[in-house]
Length: 460
Image (tube, rainbow, N blue to C red; front, side, top):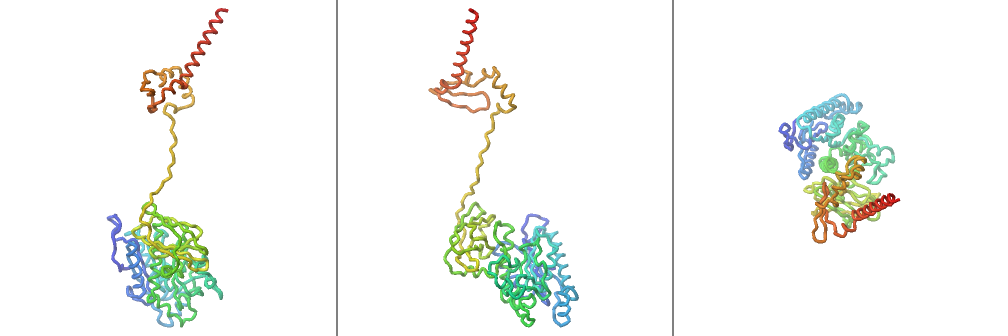
């Protein structure tokens, strides 16, 4: 595999150079020439447009494999009866899988921090799906399958599939259903890949199946297969890449808790942007340097809120929630935030998009009072404290009773205690009427009473 795009250095490791943020691997369809197919150019266009705006670097490479054509009845028959897993077609797929894994091992050694994006068209979709099973979830960005012969959309099964009766916002639709306008689409020509999206790659697969595409199962008539060759010319591929760049990869550095991630094709960016509806009631607060708090009052009839950044729909959330906090936001790039309120039936109620505020509110941290530490003189076992208080010599060192530590300043008395306690200024009256004076008076009266009783007893 030979990279078609230039490399970009982005880290400080002198031993790891020419490493972009993303390694995008594309597998072409049957009979296509390397680096010269319409779908390849459409993928390149989508990546170039989106990632330049997004501030990320990437390297687009194409899988080096035969991509055998399906040009005669024998090849069609062999591929069909083996579900693409044997004969010349199956050997071609296996060669493509091995090339992807060899390239992955090379990148792991040279650029260990890179993320992988796998994109495949037709036969190439089978290649990238099989290769993805050997990837780690941490290094995997997303997978885009275009016109996949192993398409599997269980919601399209039967005479009255739920995909035909569901609203555009339906949690029962497959997570990987990015674009499949024909609601009866169920399985591709070679049957459905089950499970289509492995659990370790949850929310990282996306499927595009055009109308009138017999290969991916949107058409059940082999003579209605024109849609299979129209992915590039119709702009679907570039649109899909633009959608996935933000919807899948933005979560690597942004926290959007509670936001449903599944892309919804019927609510495209263009439809949201062109809606002529009154402004939504929502507010934005910019907290600190990288946090944005969205709050709204849901209008009547609104069940969901679609969140978009820079014109790309990231997902949706229940309108009743009322707020959403975004963390680790780069305000140099995130310069357009949109909220679209939609009903359960898919009707747009209100829509608005505007720039985040420039005023930054300070982050208010909760101040927890520190516990008051005891005086050093009182730290110790209870027996030591009691002995220190009752010992007679302690009276001689008492700060109040020691005349050397008492200085008269006008009407106040400044007490300079011995020990760690800070200097204190107390009113003069407090010294006269305080507890020390009372203790002295009681002591004098008690001593007089004892002397009187002793003298009275002697007299008797």
